[in-house]
Amino acid sequence: MKSVPVRIRPSQRLDDNLLARFERTHLRCRAEMEHWLEAVPHAAAMLCFKGNDLQLVSVNKTFYSSFLESSDPDAEMPYCQDWRERILEVALADNVSSSFELRRDGPLGPEYFSCTAGLLPSNEEGVNLILFTAMDRTSDRVTERNLRRELLSDGLTALPNRTGFGEEIDDRLRNTPWAGNSQFGIIAIDLSRFSRVNESLGPMAGDELLITVAKRLKSNLRQGDVLARIGGNDFAIFARLNNGLSDCLHIVQRVKDALNSPIRLSDLQIRVDCAIGCALSTSLDDDPDDVVRKAQAAVKIAKRSGKVEIYRNGVLKEAQRRFSIESRLRTALAQGDLTLAYQPLIQLQTGEITGFEALARWNDPDLGNVSPCEFIAVAEESGLITPLGRWAAYEAAQALSRWDAKFGQALPVGINVNLSPIQMARDDVASMFEEALRYSGVSGKRLTVELTESAIIADPDKARKLLVALKDLQMPIAMDDFGTGYSNLASLHSLPIDILKIDRSFVSTMLEDKDKQAIVRTILSLAESLNLHVTAEGIETQELAHALQSMGCGHGQGFYFARPMPENEAFDYWRARWNFETI
Image 1 (cartoon, rainbow, N blue to C red):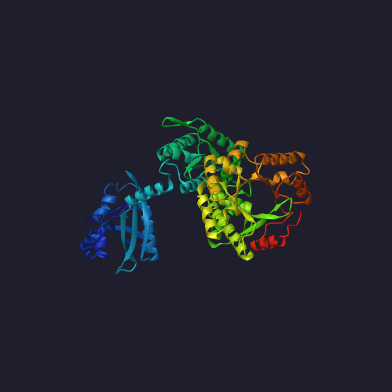
Image 2 (tube, rainbow, N blue to C red):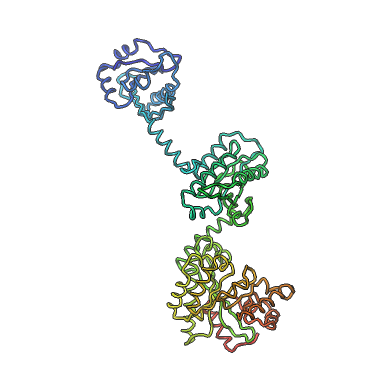
């Protein structure tokens, strides 16, 4: 291939005799060098650096067709300046080699070359021979760009995914001019009851619903806002806020308006409800990921409250604590670190201890004593309530068995075990209690199940079948927190319930509140009519105990009698009161 000069810089026009002069002074085997360049499978050129002057000596066919053939010798080629400067760095610094990437605008779009410049031995002082190669990487870069686009976007809606959302936010914050008082906000949107669409109409209908929602939301965005699908049925909006919360609430209203009209799926019209949570940055320096997490924490509260929620300080810490509790609780269940405490149930007329209520307790090495209200709520939310409930049932039955062994015969007491509505819906509860009784050798009459009114109302037919199965095991059934739910006389009469437990909210202040005292009397009268036993919770004073006794209440529990205590202390407490002290 004949050597071709190239214009390296606008101010320099190469001498036509350059190659001949270079051949006479530097390259005795010119033909051999041309053969070497042609042996290189990609673009290659030989350059000479002498006296601060860089000159092109020889090129192969690939280099000529890629860089020189279509070029006007008199035209300025900006991309030449890039690799010329890198080659000069090699020559001036006496670097053995250097690698870099060259980008130029081609007829079909950007073109990319992976370039190397390496020094060759030279016999003449002050003269550097440089081998320059350029490998076409355009197809690789296009493939990488396409793969990156797929990694950063949601394949169903073509919106940015969670990762792409973060990059879009970073790009807006870096490359968009912001006024001094500007801030940004994240609006998190959770589609309510989306799983029901999948279950009833199938996943294709669910996909169609998501696509339609995405289109509606996107059509209502302002210029510069970013919409992303960050989860299965979760969307998020990055919004520029010039007027703080008022701008944010304006966007929320646009979201509501977009989803207000029903969406047609097949022959059905579906109304989309959503929970919306918002978080506002305090400054443009805030970590966007942190603001997104705050918005997601707010939307969880919105799902419970049914209202638009704005993130408040402390909510994220609460969410992080719930996550820590869930993680530690999972470990505690696996390692057997939870215990049961037992609070006595007292026969108010005689003072006899007729049983105990088993209450879960957890002392974690890192979190300390965690309240049952806290970790049971987390267990129900995370699904850990099933293994937790199973552990409690087995452990309570085993405790009765150990007490019997200590006493030498079956104790005349039983244990009440709480049953969560979540476990009731997801677990085979009847089989669980059957196993607990069989493994412990305890009669079903001594293990009472306590369930709340909400567990029955959620699925009355399933609840009735379960209660019948538990009655087949001879287990008593207690309705806990009675008076706070939605029970009616028909459900009480039709279900095999044995005990009503009056909620402490009525009992603890009934001496000062005549209305609550009337409610307690009504419940006692109702229970007597239905031939049900009654236990009053929250008895904390002797006056309350005597008042309930005089009203005809059969049993009570509360701090006046005893606080929940460990298994061994509970057994000792029962044995010490074996003579049936009066209250």
